[in-house]
Structures are given as C-alpha cells and as structure tokens.
Amino acid sequence: MAQFPITLNRFIIEKQAAHPAATGEFSVLLSQIGLVGKMIAQDLRRAGLINILGSTGATNVQGEVVKKLDEIANDTFVKVFKYSRIVCALASEELEKPLLVPENWPHGKYILLFDPLDGSSNTDVNMPLGAIFSVLRSEKKDGLPSDTELLCKGVDQVAAGYVLYGSSTMLVFTVGQGVHGFTLDPGIGEYLLSHEQIRIPPRGKVYAVNEGNYHKWPAGTQRYIDHLKVPDKASGRPYSSRYSGCLVADVHRMLLSGGIYLYPGEVDKPEGKLRLLYEANPLAFVVEQAGGSASTGTTRVLDIEPKSLHQRVPLIIGSREDVAEAEEFIQGKREG
Image (cartoon, helix red, strand yellow):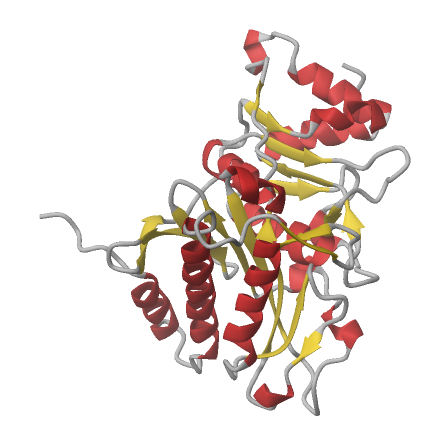
C-alpha cells in the first residue's frame, strides 16, 4: 500500500511538535507563504484570459518596468501578511521603503522580505516564474523595527525559500535543517511533500548565465564561461547551457540536478544586478542547506554586511565544486 501523502500543514505541525517551546506563529507564517503561492498560481493560470498581462506603465524603485502581475503578486503578499498578526514589517522589490505593520504589534515577531514575482519578463510568453522570500526575527522588544534593523546578514535568516510557477507549482524552503520541496496538487488544493531533504550534487553538467552580457564581463568571468565550453571527458565538459530568464527556475534546476548559475558583476557595474536581501540571501541559504555554495566570486554571500535595502550583488550559486572553480577564474587564480 502506497504511503499516504504528507501535506505541508501536516509536515509543519509534526516539525513543530518536536520543539516543545514553539508557539506556533512560525508554523502559521510558512502556511501563509503557501497560501500566497496558491493565490498567485491561480492568477497566473488565468493571466491571458483576464487582462492582467503586459505592463502597468510605471517603474519601480529599481527603475524597472512594472508588469501588471508584479503589482498583483506584491499586493497579494501584502494583503495576506498585513493582517496575519505574524509579521511586524514587510519589504519587497516593488516597495521603495519597508512597510511597517503596527496592526500586528506586539504579536508579530517576524520580518518578511520578498521578491513577489521573479522573472516577470516571462509573464507575457508563458515561461517559468517564481517568488522568493526571506524570514528574519525581529529583535526589537519596545516597538516596530527601524529600517536599518532589516539589514541583516544572510546567516541571520530563520527561514528562506521560493515558490516556482512552472509545469507545476512548487514551494521549496529551509528553516536551517535541510531543504524540502512541496508540489501543489490543484485537484485538492494542497501542497504535498515531493522532495524531502534535497541534496545538490557536488558538481553538475549545466550552467545558466545571460551570455548576451559576455562583453560586459571582467576577463576572469569570460575565461570561466569559455572554459565550460571546451570538451574534456575527465571533467565532464562541455557543459550544457540552460538559461530561462527566471532566477528561481534556473536555481531550482541546479538544486535538483547540479550545475552553476551566474549573474556576475560587470566591468561598469561590479555590484551586479540581483538584490542581496530578497534574492541572493534566501537562495544562498537554501542552496547551502542542500550542500551547495553561493558566492559573489570573492565572498560568501551569507557573510555580506548589507548597507541598504535594495543593495545589489553578483551571484554565483550552485554545486560546491563548480562554484569553487568559478571563484578561481574570477579571482585570477586560474587562467584555463
């Protein structure tokens, strides 16, 4: 007889039972993340039918064009968590400043940082999309957190993960005790445990990078990508190129199958493109918990001291051996 499927709620309750001091708020937070994923997945399934494709005509704080679905996804996160009594502050790619939630004080103990719709350039062409989240614990006992208190190192995260909207909807997360993946069964409206204790292979055969930026990269990065294309049976080269335009989808591939994703710094933009607090940090936490690595090319991502909410960093993430090799090229320790 097949094992009865484990739902997200059952999984959370069982894990909570193992910690007698747990009060339940954190478990509710993870359940609410799942709810957000369901709501956004429903909008995405109907996007071409209810006139929510295309842009709003506005730009966000990053200077990027806001898609209608960007705005809808951001509003969904805010609506679900604003009255949850769980979080005291929210911050996202679409909000210039953190959104404090006095309605939840003093009950809300957590801070939620998120990218509500990763890969939004894919919205109009039915390609994969995602959402990324990072959870911090508010240490302030006498009021709501200040803006600077959201600027925590990645090692201070208490949970992180992502929702992938692809051929199926998946919720993948870590609370610092391994990485687990749940697949949404639309027939019953439940997330079911489909990937328990995910481990990323130490080396892969795939790389993902926007090679249209090749001539903007420093020489070390160029040499590394050239190196991956040179046939060599002993090291498993050449690697195959797989790039979807959705960070979540590409990192998910590496998490399950091994390989390396790069969004490196450029000669004129050494800080890179991806945001530290709600893109690089949460994905780095997930990948490291699965046995992989995440680096800027010179520094471990989770050790970076953030200076601003929307700070950008280069990101090299994936299988441990692949990331180490990329660092050697980027730091000039290896020529070929």
